[in-house]
Structures are given as C-alpha cells and as structure tokens.
Length: 112
Image (cartoon, rainbow, N blue to C red; front, side, top):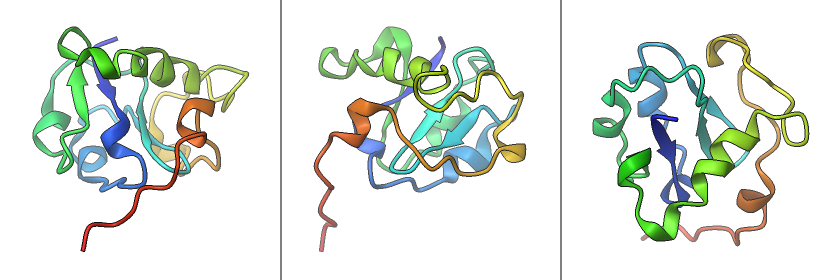
C-alpha cells in the first residue's frame, strides 16, 4: 500500500483528494474516504490536497494511526464493502458503509 486515509478524515470527507487523484483510487464511504491499496500509484498528490491532513504514506504513518493500513485494505474486501478492485471510484460512487473500526467511532463534533 502506498497512501492511507486515517482518522482525521472521519466525518470530514472534504473530497479535494478525490478530485486530485490521477487514477481515481480514493473511494467515499459513509463517514470517511478510503484509498484502494492496489489502485494507488504512490504519487502522493492527494496528500497536498487533504485539508485535515488525514493522508499519509504507509511508511510515515504515526504509530497511533497504523491500524488504518488494515482499515483501508479491508474496506474493499467481501466482509466490508465487497467492492474488490473496481478500477476507479468514479464508476462506483459513494458506498453506504464503512469499515467497522470507522463505524464504531463516535461522531466528530464540528469546530465552531
């Protein structure tokens, strides 16, 4: 895996990263975005477009966010979304579920 969406994206989903991704490998779940580990080309463009700074290169993940390696990968597996490798988020659209780790998080309160 090259880049990983972490907890800072939960309930934010700004979407600028999706528009910036040249290979359409960032998918929208119910509460967060997910980067497909087999479709990402490791370019890093998404990092500079992420306002909450929720995207990290896998080798630079903070220790507290390391479990998001599995969260991003498992989101596409049959037990979660069942998407597999569709070859681009644009044809899929928003997915009405999240990984159980994300779904279990309390809602983020907006900053006023």
